[in-house]
Amino acid sequence: MRLINIYCENNGTTKAYEPGISLLQVAQDQNIRLESAILAALANNLLKELWYEASRPQTVRFIDYAHPDGKRCYQRSLTFLLQKAVKDTFPECSLSVEHSVSNGFYCELKNAPGFGAPMVAAIARRMRELVAADLPFEKTKVPTAEAIAIFQKQGYAEKARLQQTRGKLYTSVYYLDGYADHFYGPLTPSTGALSSFGLTPYYNGMLLMFPKANNPAALESVIIQKKMFDIFQEHKLWVDILQAGAAGQINQLIQRSGGGELIKVSEALHEKKYAQIADHISLRRGDVKLVLIAGPSSSGKTTTSKRLAIQLKVAGFVPKVLEMDSYFVNRDQTPLDEHGDHDFESVNAVDMALFNDHLDQLLHGKRVLTPKFNFDSGMRYYSNAYMELGEKDILIVEGIHALNPKLTEAINLKNKLRIYASALTFINLDENNRISTTDNRLVRRLVRDTFFRGNSAQATLHRWASVRRGEDKNIFPFQENADIMFNSSLLYELNVLRKYAEPMLYRVLPNDTAYVEACRLLKFLSYFELINPECERGIPPTSVIREFIGGSSFSYQ
Image 1 (spheres, rainbow, N blue to C red):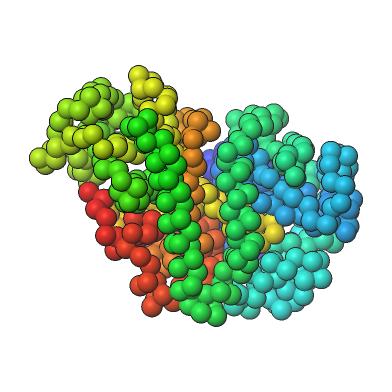
Image 2: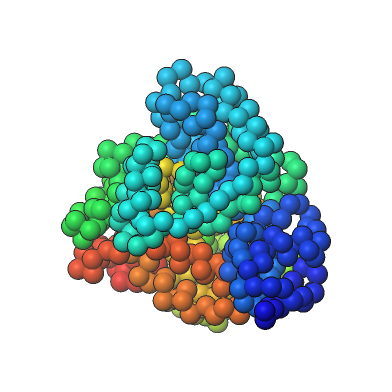
């Protein structure tokens, strides 16, 4: 029998094996040891379970919880473990994994009268029993009709609906001790790898807590985020009324009517929210002189500022918008992160001295020459753009650092209104496969950066880890400082973004380290039905999605 060579990046060793050897056997044979348990592997830049059997030459890198894909693998597996524990402990109940908040996943139990701390404790005990039993996760592919029947029998209507709308002949089904589920990414080899977790009561549900990335033996701390939680709950009620809270439901709406009604309703909700914010500012007329809009990358801050400005005009204000991005230092002066890359999320990437000087002059009625920033050249420039605030004028400042107290510490709190804007994705794939807000923003960004900022998809993917570190350090700690939170996500946006993102992601080559992330996003996007082209043309030119796909009536430099 002809042997195959497997090169292991972890130890720099190439060794020949018989075809069909599992990656777990390779790790054991080569005695691979990582900082924490091996959870999965990158085989030829594709993410694979450890039970994957190699039949051709491979370059393999084993990963643990410190790797983003290892962390996602752990989280998927842990939610499956939680789901199984719920069914074992309270068979009449069903689990719904809602969204990320307070450093964990917020989950609710359906059909759970008397829900409270004792029920949460009982579920956690069962989870630990399943971990101690070290039960294997098993994967099989079955005809999609069979998978649908399995999920319907288990009471997961949205999981079944999602598979019905995908149009695939076969579907992957994972099993844990006879209990079935579907995931769009690998799981750990067994429950024994999931020893570190927390489960605690949280509002009307419970919070599933995960280990720290830099210390898997310790759990993340619960950080109360009431404002963030409230906005998720507000939108959950809204989508439940529309019956559009899961990808399968949205796919069905698009398959039936093309998506035109979905677009109209989503855009109407945004318009209503902008008007409500303007009304709130109007109630503080005479006090509020400065509106600060912050949010992470690709959250739609710029469109939010422009559409709010329109509503403020309706309310009798004369709004002026000042974009913090225009105050970036030149590229050669941008600070570097610990990896030697440009740290665009650092507050020091902004010319704070110039910004504060201009802000002070404007609020004192003076006229200033405001800059612009060219993202292609990485240079700041001036184009005769002067700004001055009149008696009825109100200044809107948008940028990732706008909620940082240092930015406006000299301005009285009563004279400013703080808004946090982000694409807080409030739909899920199904009952227990959530859609990450981070993934939503990443898809937005790679489309926008390719179209308008001269970056390839792989360049965006390579930079994303640095962006996320910067957000964790410079943006998220201040989000609860906001007076108002605005959710810029749209029910239909992933169904639109898929058309633009897929060709970009397909151009990422297998020998690029970004290939694994490109493949993950392609799999993720495959769950969304494409919007009818005629309906897409009906997206208003003022929509936030136009900031990313083009066709906006607003100018974005």
